[in-house]
Each structure stands twice: as C-alpha cells, then as structure tokens.
Image 1 (cartoon, rainbow, N blue to C red):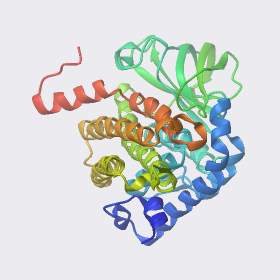
Image 2: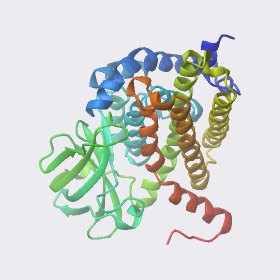
Image 3: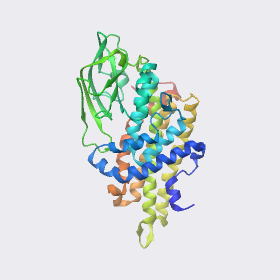
Image 4: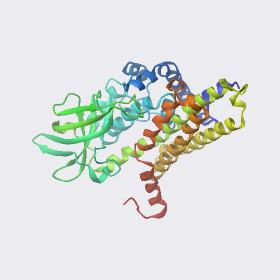
Amino acid sequence: MTAEAKIVTSDFYDLEALLDEEDRALLLRVRAFMDEQVQPVINDYWTRGRFPMELVPGLAKLGIAGLQYTGYGCPGRSPLIDGMVAMELSRGDPSMATFMGVHGGLAMGTLYLCGSEEQKERWLPPMARLEMIGAFGLTEPDHGSDVARGIQTTARRDGDGWLLNGQKKWIGNASFADLVIIWARDEETDRVLGFVVEKDTPGFTTVDLEDKIALRAVQNALITLEDVRVPEENRLQEARSFRETANVLRMTRAGVAWSAVGCSRGAYEHALRYAMGRTQFGEPIVRFQLVQDLLVRMLGNITASAAMCARLSQLQAEHRMTDEQASMAKAFCTVRMRETVGWARELMGGNGILLENHVGRYVADAEAIYSYEGTREVNTLIVGRAVTGVGAIV
C-alpha cells in the first residue's frame, strides 16, 4: 500500500468493510466531493465567516440529506453509513458536517420523529433534495445545558394559530433557512411544543453571531421572535413534551460523535502528509521517533473512537441505543478529538497555526464540537446516573 493510500483512508481497523458495496461507493463519493470541491475553497469561507452556498447543489447530488430516514423522499439507509458520512464530511471540513447535521439531523429528524403524516409529506421531500434548508431552534441566550427546564420562549394559543415570543441563540443555518424548528413552552399547559416557522414570517428576525473562533463557515444566529404567528398546521403534532425533543437529540448526538472522529481524521491526515514532506536536520521528520509517537497516539484515538461509534450505530439500527450510550460516545470521542487535533498542531510546530496548512482550522472547530449537543460534563453525568442510579446534575 502506498503512503498516500494510508493517508486517504486512515481506517486502521478497516471499519469501512462493515459497509456493503453500495454504501462504500456512497462514502467514496462523499470523500471525493469534500477533497475536490470543499478543500480548495473552505479556508476562504472560514476566514470570512460565511457558508459556501454554491456547494449546496453538489451536496444535493450526493443524496445524503436525511440519509437514515425511510420514505418521504429520503434514502432509508443504515445508521452506520449515516454516521460514516457524517465522519467523512467532518474529515473534509467540520463546518460542512455541522451544516448537514443541523439540516439533515436536527431539522429533518424533528419532522421525521414529531411531524404528522401531512407535515412529513409537505416538508421532508424538498428538504431531502436540499431545495429547502432547515434549522433547529432550541438553545436560548440564558439556557443551554439546562434548557430542558429553562425554556423561556413562549407559545400562546391565539384563535386558529399560535403566537411565539422569545429568543434562540447559536442556531446554525437560521439566517438563510427556509424553515426553522422552534421549541417553545405553552403558556397555558407549561408543556414544551415544537413549531415550524417558515422563512419571512413577520416578527421573526435573525442576527448572525460574528467573531467566532470555531466553525466559522457555519452561520450561527441569534433569533428574536416577536408575536410570530404560526398556524396550527405548523405545530408539530407529535411533539407534546420535552421528551420528544430529547428523542431527536439522542439520535443526533450519535452523529456528533462520528463528526468528532472525522475532525480527528482530517487533522491526522494533514499532519501525516506534512510530516512526510517536511525536512529538518537533513531528514524527513516522519523518520523521527517522537513524530511517529504522535502519529500513533492520534491514530489510536481515531481507531478507538471510530470503533465505539460503529458499535453505537449497530445498536441504533437494532433500536437498542440508549441516552447514556449516545452520551458516552459523544463525551469520549470529543475528548479524544481535542487531544488528537492538538497533537496534529504540535507535530507541525509553528506551521500548525497557519490556515494554509488546514490543521489550525480543525483545532479551532474542535472546540465547538466539544461543546455542542451536550457538554462533556453533562454527557458524563448522564452516563454517571446510568451506572450509579444517582442523578448528580444539580
């Protein structure tokens, strides 16, 4: 096997062999798209803090939006290929993976799990074709980890519709999305309900969050809702409490764990490529023992994390994945990711902080992946409650 082949795969335990031929072909198409279309332009968009909208048609042709959902124009593939595609997107660029995770995971997943048949038929097919882009509004300015108890955005029944008031923060895709899922507390019953707010609805405004140090190509927004009127047919009919919200997050948390593996793989591959071409003291640095030690540490983290995610996807396919299993993967893989991207930057020395060498982008983006969809601490406490029987979050 050539050195370049090793760089391209970085799949030391050949987990891709778990996929059938059709799914492996899809994974290779995603890899080629990220290498050929995304890598040459992403640093420019990352620097400017803008999402590369001209790449959306290419993403649409891949047919990966809502990959594991069945029917409604969705591909109906396995959780394993869905996770590996998330990994492959993140390997190329974590911002692109996050865009698809928000659209295909959180937004489409909410509609798939919580929508009525009419709502699924109405919105999922154009979203699967990326003709409509979705966003997911849960986190608020004053409520992140405690949002289950602290949602302040309100919904009040008003005739044949609802009036929504409040704010949401850190909402990816929101400033250009065609529809945004908004979670709000019913003023009358105190239950958490879900609503689809369509683009250009009066009273719905967004302001992009500027000066981020991570996932800069993702346009996160602060959403303000001022008497936003939503018709009853846009209320998610199967979302009756925060339990339904949690069902969506359990599913997408597995995807974040896979994305962490991809972020690690991207940094590792760039570092390995660099080590093979960089000469110091008259020798390629890849010949130095300490450099090989760093590479093996990185590859060990990647392999362990990917194996954990693969088993998690198998449990998901069997409908046996639990909250604590998803939380364990998210917490473990993001910690290992943080180590791995740091070692990749260390291997490259001062050149590791130059955007042209890519690794610095993964180092920065890892900080966002480490925190979103449940911080390490909160996910640890979910697992801790499962193994001890004692809740210790507060």
